[in-house]
Image 1 (tube, rainbow, N blue to C red):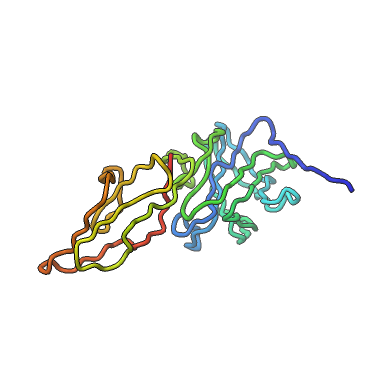
Image 2: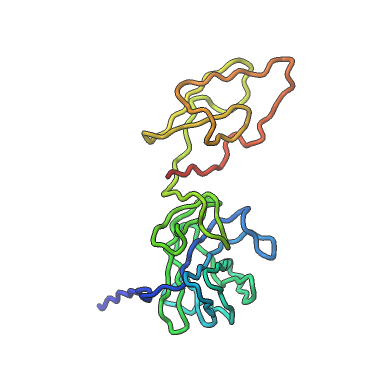
Amino acid sequence: LVSLILTVTPVFSQTIVINEAQSSNLRGYADEDDEADDWIELYNTTNNSINLDGFTLTDDLLDPFKWEFPNYTLGGNGYLTVFCDEKNRYSVPFHTNFAIGKNGENIYLFNPNGNLVDSLAIPALRDEISYGHQPDGSRNFGFFAVPTPEQSNTTQLFTGWLEPPTFSLESGFYTSQQTTTISHPESGVTLQYEFGGAIPGASSPVYAGPLSITPVSASTPDQYATVPTNPSLNYPIG
């Protein structure tokens, strides 16, 4: 029985990096079909233009030439977004013949000589979250709640996300005053809240103890929140 271990090391001088990626793009960056698909972003770390003719992208090391770039020049310090959605198109915007696995996948960039230029180990991503370098082209990685395809990764970088908090009061309709507590399984977490359906922000009150919720009076028209009762939100942490 013979075992084979295949290892691939990027070329020493990296000129192009896979700078950012998103594997669960539902309502964000759209292609020419007005569809929000998986994508990766390439970044030219040099001041010089680089012709990508013959460069390849793949999600399978056993198939390094899975998708090949046509004649296209990426300008110095420029960005290029490539949709990974199996549409297999060779004009801008480019579309590969493979998609990115939502549960995590490695993406590789090879030059025309078959040398690995860069790779990005994309972890499992939640909806609308991207993953990439900050600063651009560095070896520092993290998650972005605000993806930036075709732009520098300057939005806030997070190292992960928190699970949602737990409310002691079940969601529903109540005709009398109610009290609820909010808890979180991790210690040291700061919880902020709002009433009336607003989404909490940095300036929202900090939770310090039980909250009293009072129904509107009979003279006040019924009001409904403009956000869902159980929103599918990501809770990033720094």
